[in-house]
Length: 215
Image (cartoon, rainbow, N blue to C red; front, side, top):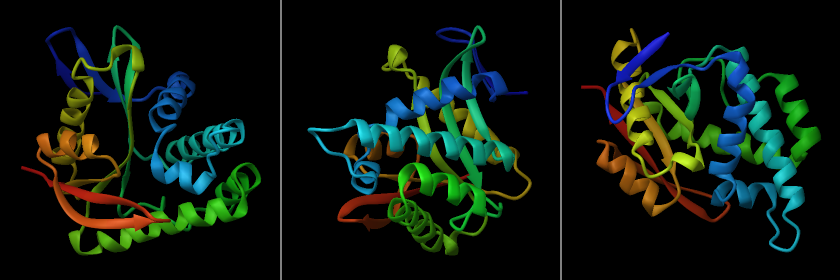
């Protein structure tokens, strides 16, 4: 199902992710979030031995995508000639996909990422939800990633326009929220109409909750 079609500079379509593209989406998210300060902190990145961190990150991305898919939360892809070039994972604030998650998600992640790390990730999500509790019904952008081979072409902006359409077509959600930890991320989302709502800190890593109401 197409959400948005953009004619220039090439024919791009923003549509729901197909099952056969789940592994490609996982790879794009892994690459985009490899250097995320919060994830590096929580999952225990070590400069001299990054392999353990990378294994945990792959496991996290795999389990997150599985939970989004099973709970039928929006997995939105940007396609060009059937090739996935960018991915966004969004969840509805009213969905069952929440901090506590279901037991088998927690068990799988604990086995692969660790007990402490899993609880820290759950606490991070709970804190974000509580901070946004006054904002009513919204969609939250958990992950957004562009194929490294096509970065710098404005594809992230095209994908966000598709998410704008998703919010506007929703019968309930009236806004889109995101949490960022880097200045370039803040500048990017600010240029797309997001405003900083609240500063948060996780394990001494600071970031901003940003919010964009539907037009």
